[in-house]
Image (cartoon, one colour):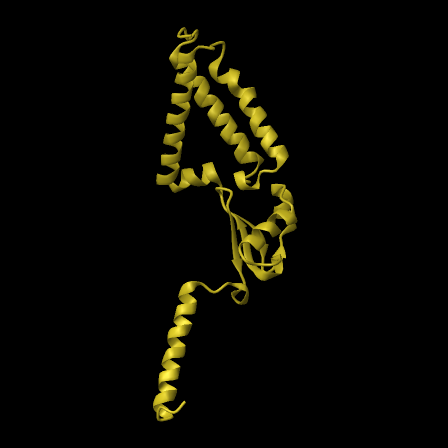
Length: 186
């Protein structure tokens, strides 16, 4: 249970090497986030964790070895995340850039095809943001983290509470002016 079988340095090297390889493959394969994973993507993610397990722990099935691998994995990820947040160039390399999926109400088919996204998947996101179809948008963009940004045409945007409050205040001012001009007779 406590006999690691391999050195902690070997385990740390293996963990970091597998982390970098998986991160690079995920970066190359696309930037669909967890929200956009389809069933096949989920199966691949689950199987991938099993495939790389032995590459990380090697012949070690001990509790100490597993915990050491976990600590190295979490610590290295924390370093990568903090460096990416602090250094914009590293963030571009690690996360990539946003990709425009639709502009001025029309899909960019080449971008959808390159990312393996279906129009129906993007349509759902547009509807969740208050639009009906891609024609209601000025911009649809997939962000580096996998979130989808949807900008609706101004006439398609929903009013917010502040907008309604502002309209009520304007109407109140107009009514007061009318009362003043009409001598108070309503």
